Length: 336
Image 1 (cartoon, rainbow, N blue to C red):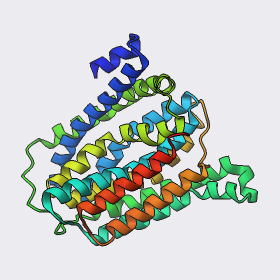
Image 2: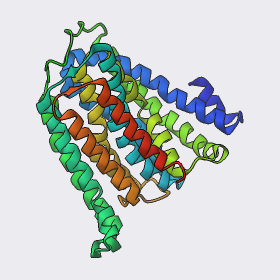
Image 3: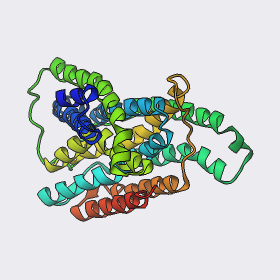
């Protein structure tokens, strides 16, 4: 993290600065991963999934704010969709793959999976309404800013109403291969480390965005691919670490809750928050009008994930299929 800070003020090359800032985000992910593991033993999968996903999406929120201030609206829009895709397809696929190879078929609470899937489908459907209005040239197309604001407020209200139900769900299905070990850290230490990592996320995100634009030019990467893949994966480093670790330890209930809650919160919280904040932070004003390929990609991802987890079980082959779909979608954006 120190090296990433130095590259912010000392010219060591744009690629070096970009790589160091991405590694700094990953270092924060490792800290959060360990802290969340401790909290999971106390609070159960429901509350832990909500807490971890909220903290895990903080780097993406800060990256989005700094990118909007830099005028990188295309990167932000691609990163929003990319965050949903990377969690729903790549991270969940890796968790299924690693967990399946190490532990065989894994099971989790199918009722909770259905509940999350329903919310995810509804949230993403609402999020893409401004895009659909634009595509079919309805009268609302001329008011994309106002419509995006209205949809954002609706999504935030839905999230607020969904939190108590998510916290009350404690899971405990047969997907846990063993009883979790007793908590080893004091509660204050675990919460304190989470808070510290969250504060550092704002600083690291600024470094990341500062290095992003020069790195895009040097590496000849399209802004769409940078947002959809690179920014999304870097911003989701916490879920990458935590979810896969939990699946490897045969804690499928926690893994599913942590991973799938993240794209749900992107649709319910991150995207609408960025829309509303874009009016006050300066720079570009964000709307929920995405390109047609982004809309189709996110709809296919949500549909595929719903089919994959609604039965309450997973194996390594399902993981391979999810990763394959993510690779195909990412390749479609390589050229822009």
